Amino acid sequence: MLRVERADYQVMPPLSPEEYSELKEDIRQRGVMVPIEYDEDGNVLDGHHRLQICAELGITDFPKVIRAGMTEEEKRTHARKLNMARRHLNREQKQELIREQLRETPEKSDRQIATELGVSDKTVGVQRKEMERIAEIPQCDRETKDGRVYPAERKPVTVFNPTPREERAVKSPEVVERMAETGKSALTASREVNREAKAERKAFTLPDAMPPEMCGLHCADIRDGLKMIPDGSVDFVITDPPYPHEYIPLYYDLSVVSYRVLKPGGSLIVMCGQSYLPEVIRNLGAGLNYHWCMAYITPGGQSPQLFHKNVNTFWKPVLWFTKGDYSGDYIGDVLKSPPNDNDKRFHEWGQSLGGMKDIVERFTNPGDVILDPFLGGGTTGVAAVTMGRRFIGVDIEQDNITVSEKRIMEEYVHAGSKA
Image (cartoon, rainbow, N blue to C red; front, side, top):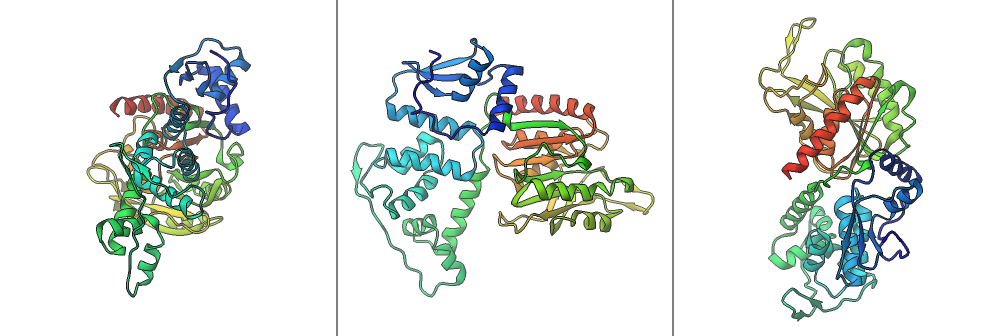
């Protein structure tokens, strides 16, 4: 039962040394949280790294699951589906799993493969069309759920005197397919396809137990550079630094660190006060490009009185800086917290969880890596992990790390119980 002799079902590349080390340390401290899955012959279907670490640590008592009666094809499909649902894969990794399934079962319909892998049939269709185009798989008849076989069809579409937007739209195989199926215009089909693609990107399922790579907290000072975070490893930095004037130099350190850790095209999203806004913008621009200033509305009785300015304010700036050019979704520039939702239970400067979820939902996708180097009471971390994102939190105070770790774990469990 403990052997791992076959690599047939190891559908993902090995973990990096850093990821493997993190998983090993987590298992050392908490044990194996996700069962290792076998077939009836003792071959490992899922959990190769966990099993190897157990052998290294001398752990023999860990949770197991046996999946019996599967064909070889079903076993590989099952392994792919588990990885699609549980591992935080980037878009290219997900596409490769779909391509592997198409190489193995090109005769199956897009809908059948989509159901097996837990993705949309449109997503499968895009990969199929590209693989057929380059002759990586044959353009074959496809078996459907009713057992009948229908010939593969290619339906051309025509756009007369296309505008530049229409020219861009018809470069998408999904848009062309939608036009052929419905008779809709290129722009209407493009809007529908983009809307559905965005909804799919935003969809997520939380694993029963939080994977160790989903959340990492560190007690450190941003002025020291946060060297524990690798270069180019973060999709978004979303944070709420202190507002008083003595902390304004930290915004320079934030810009320098963000430039180093962000991936090309990544974004820094910063809540800030208005009293020293010109200095804040100047410091954040040390390493990054100014992109936009959004209004974060705080309705209800959440209006701070700024006595030194004689102002009651019902909104605050959210500054958006980028590393290189931004090429993501369109973003509305008015953000909003629920009325009277400021939560000071975990930190004196705590923000609204509902408002932070609004920011995370608008900007990021499930599986993205979010860094908050001013962790405080962990609000950004709660929003991130309960919405299927990976999170790195840093704070200079160990007490904040302790409070946030407990809060994030409890909120994750609560979110999973409601799913």
